[in-house]
Each structure stands twice: as structure tokens, then as C-alpha cells.
Image 1 (cartoon, rainbow, N blue to C red):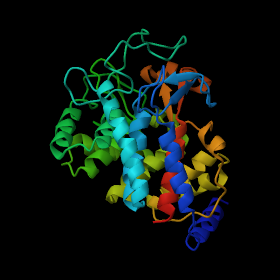
Image 2 (image 1 turned 45 degrees about the horizontal axis):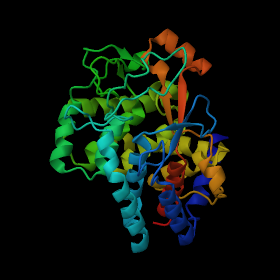
Image 3 (image 1 turned 90 degrees about the vertical axis):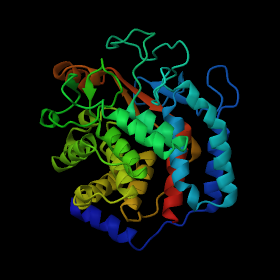
Length: 379
């Protein structure tokens, strides 16, 4: 049955490129721009509003100032910008200009060129609540790899700055000095990157984060290190053992879904072919196509469409959701995962019960995902 589904999707896709209206692309860019905050009592100027929910249900009740979604939107817009009209490029330039001052609020305050998910320049109240919260409310998490690489990308990092932060990253790997958590036992021995720039926090692997770090290495043509090679080996092991399908929340605790892991892998592979991943491409495409065919969620379908396009396939046409359905969708791209800091027994129990999981939503990022798909489908 699986092979039939994949055959139908990919045979149709090979002859049917989706023709999308340039007007919709322009409308999406304007819509993203309009969501960028100018003045607000809570949100910083230039930020794209995002929200936290303790359940995987979209809610705009709990507002959140974070740099993550701004940096992701910037990264997405920069990647598609070469394929847009001059007028649309001007819209992106305006968005970027308004966002530039934001990064100073999230950079490490001790001079290191790393970035935090939340503000570092002022007193901060930790936004997660509940019995499983291991942090005091005024304690900020360490800077992290994801926000660092995306924030540097958003600011057009220089070659020298990229090389310098890559050197810093080598001190934050699974090198035996910190306890290793949030990983399957078979992955314990890989000297890959931790998610966090924190000496006191356990080493936590996330294959999606590792894909982002390696994308940064590839995009900036950096010399591979032992940690880079180990991270690739860990990603490859996750695929060959099927962990990205059967244990997604454990191998990617902050993204937590097979479809999102596939999206990250495809984004890495699109920069420059990596033989170890190219050898697994058929498996990856098959799994992505199956989820594409069976998902009922339009955001997930849009994201997987871009994933398949990056692997060289066109997907059949499908109904584009309304802005309301797109922006207020329950599909969370990023998850705050408190159980990831705990030992195996408590982590598995809490995860299975959905305790300590916080879902982050950003309507403008969902718009950016649709925009990416429309542009890629017309390349």
C-alpha cells in the first residue's frame, strides 16, 4: 500500500508542476510585513508576534518575545529572494531593515557572539509554568545553537565571524564532561554538538538542530571538524534505524515530528550534496510522500511539499488554505520540551503524558512556509 501511495504521488508530480499566482506571492509578502510589530505594549518593535500554548492547540493568549521565529522568517525570505520580482525584493529588504535592531536584545551579554531564544538585555521571567518547571522564574536558559546560527544568517554573518563561532561550538559537544540526556542509548557515544551553549546543562541532542548547524557549516564553506562528522553520523544513524519515524520526540525533542525532521534534512541536503545522506534519499522521499498523502493538516502538507521539491520532486496541486486557517493552525513547528532535561524514566513518563511540553506558534512563519512553497514550485 505504501509503495502504491508513493508511486501515485511521484508519478503525478513528475508531470504536474503547480502553477501559482504571482499575486498570491506578493499578497503573502505584504501580509508578513503587516504582522511585523511597529509599536506594542508587549512585543518589541520589528518582531513577529508569537505565542505559547501548553497544549498543541493554537492560542494567542500567552504572548512571547523570542528571536527564533524572526530569525527563521529572515532565513526563509533570504533563500527565496533571488527568485522574486524587484518589487517583492524591496518588501523583503524593508522587513529585514526593521528586524535588524532586534538581535541586540538577544545576543550574549558577555561578549560571545551567540544568541538566546529569549531576551538577554533585561530582567526576564521564565514563561513556562507548572510542576515540571526545573528553573526559577527569573532564570534564563543558556544560548543555543539554533538561535545562534539563524540570527547570524539573518545578519549576513561575515566569513571570519562564521569561522569564529564555529570554533566556539567545538567546546559544546558530547565530550564526557556533561551528563548526556534526551537521547536514545544507541546514540550515546557520538561526540556531536549539544543543543545548548551551557556548561551546567546536560548535553541534549536534537537531529533537527544538528541539521541546522551543519547547514551553517555548509553554507559558509567551513572546514568540517570531528563534531561536524559525528553530528552527520548521528543524523544518518537516526535515519537508518528509523528513529526519526518511531522516536521523533526523543531524537528531536524541540521539533518532535517526523515531517519537521524531514524538512530539516532536506534543507541541509539542498545546500550541497552530502554522500551519506544522498544514499538514503529514496527512503527519505518515500516517507515524506507517505506523510504528504495522509496528513490532513495544511501547514504540514505545505512544509512537506517544499521538502519534496528540494529533493527534486513536484507535488500534485492541493487546496491552499485561507489565511485564518493557515495562521491559526494547531501544527506547532517548535516545542519547548522541559522533559528533555530529565533522566530517562521521568522524561519518557512526562513525554507520554504530554507534561512539560509547550508549543510555540507564529502566524507569520506559517505564511513564510506557504510563501517558500509557492516560490519553489515556480522555480
